[in-house]
Image 1 (cartoon, rainbow, N blue to C red):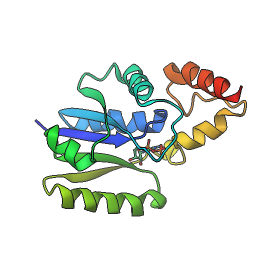
Image 2 (cartoon, rainbow, N blue to C red):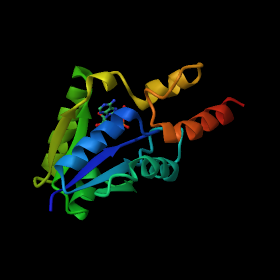
Image 3 (cartoon, helix red, strand yellow):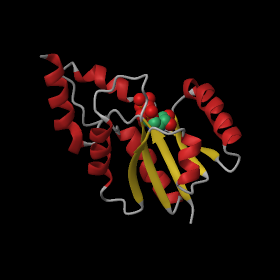
Length: 162
Ligand code: ADP
């Protein structure tokens, strides 16, 4: 059974992330989407909230599991019996950092490879941080965020504005 891991911050999950999740779930037997806890970042949503939002939008995908971890990714993959990390590549700007991470992870865990799925053209510009900026203005977010999570996103924006 081929188990892949799709790691990220998912703060919050966007339509770009969801597109990668759906495509990867079609390729692998099982996909574990893992919210990686990053002590350096001050997130908009807690780890548990990000996990809950991801679960809300992936309920239709029976081979997708949502998890979180504060471990080293290469170590987490070993524990979960996965030999593939899935990453989305938006533009050349993602490439340098992702290439370096892939090499490091492979060095730490030689049984682990990284596969890149190219972003769909309509999501190439889309990142969680861009959506957070847009959210402060009166912009229709349905193109950027799964509809089911827009109320939670707007509620969080409103509560942080106060
Ligand atoms: P970001 O805050 O930039 O959205 P994440 O850490 O949540 O970053 O991203 C997790 C993974 O999803 C990374 O591999 C990233 O390249 C990928 N990704 C993020 N947004 C998109 C998108 N719009 N299309 C394709 N892949 C994406």
